[in-house]
Amino acid sequence: MAPTTRQEDSGSPSPPTLKTPGRGARRVRRAFQVVVAAVLLVLFLFPFYWVVITSLNHTNQVLQFPPSFLPHWVFQNYARAWSEAPWLRYFLNTIFIALVTTLLVLVTSILAGFAFGSLRFPGKNLIFAGFLSIMMVPYVVLIIPDYIVLKDLHWLNTYWAQIFPFAGSVFGIFLLRQFFLSLPLELWEAAQIDGASRFRFLRQVALPSARPALVTIGIYTFLGTWNSFLWPFIMTSSPSVQPIEVGLSTFLGTNGTDWTGLSAAVVFTTLPVMVLFLLLQREFMAGASAATGGVKG
Image 1 (cartoon, rainbow, N blue to C red):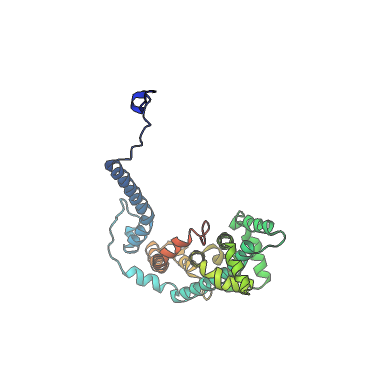
Image 2: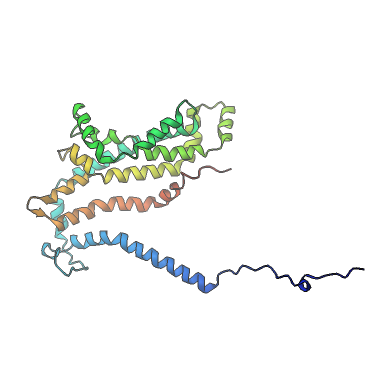
């Protein structure tokens, strides 16, 4: 009878065991992440904090050295800044331009994204590559030819010059295309059994599922339109159609820059979009992942 052998008697080393990081290592890593997040938060918030401080200081304190990091509560700067320009008109112009542009971008992004993501037609990939190539063209290169086109159309100094050139978004088309590509084929097959057309499938099935992506595109477009300066500054000349960012140039004159008035105007024109983003940040973060994931199951 052959003697039995045991693993502990064979002399072979036991496989190494993976050691999980201890509680101390996890605390150090957590503390490091908190410190990095705090530093980034300060770096991003400090410019806006400095604008607020400047808006609450006297004019002769703006360029003093060493600078003061505490406000002197000169609220008269806000009243003076509001009286320097027709801000109510600027706000109405900006809201109208931003809302109409966002609506048009959503419509064109939905239709084009659905076509590139769900339909089959000759040259689809080539046409989509052409759309993506637009993102590689520098924005300022197109200003002069676009100016000539708008002049020939008699659209200079109008709302249309600030809306229709931005009615389509390559980013929105790309985002919705990626989302519609992730839709299971079984959804379309089930819709066909029920006698649904492509448009009905888009309206009743695809669009409700794409809500996070639509919210992301809407916020992105609205904020981009609200912060637009160079294009309306060149294409418009009358306060009756100019947006907020062009109105801020009122404080830039031949005698210098009114830094306290400009800072006060920046504060009360930036707060609305900051509040809007804070209210919709959950939807924005949820839609940011739409390019890599859609409907599962």
